Length: 126
Image 1 (tube, rainbow, N blue to C red):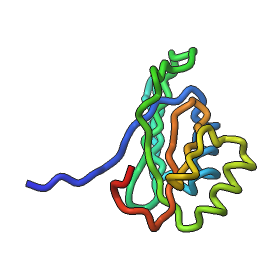
Image 2 (image 1 turned 45 degrees about the vertical axis):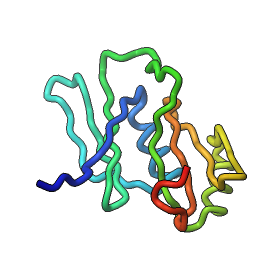
Image 3 (image 1 turned 60 degrees about the vertical axis):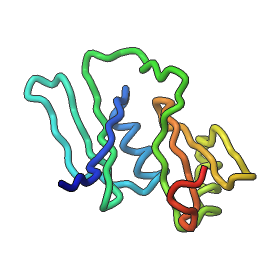
């Protein structure tokens, strides 16, 4: 038996804003979209070509999601760490930086933390 990672899901309040953020900040592109026939939800899969983040919008959700202590995150490796850092600095979305470890985190529009690592980092180092 072999399992293959497929996607992770996060719920968002403003789907258009979130799709634009994931496109600009991480270079992800929309792979597919599903809308409920009754309009109660819409799902967009954003992909890097190998992995996906599923953005789910729920019509009846009007208040921000409670992210608790926000200790969970999604990590991304990037081939040009300095350029990515400059882009995220320009976007004003860097929320935490650890220069000693050579990594930083950005916030998406709903406050989810996304870790940014240089491509040459080992798979599990922190």
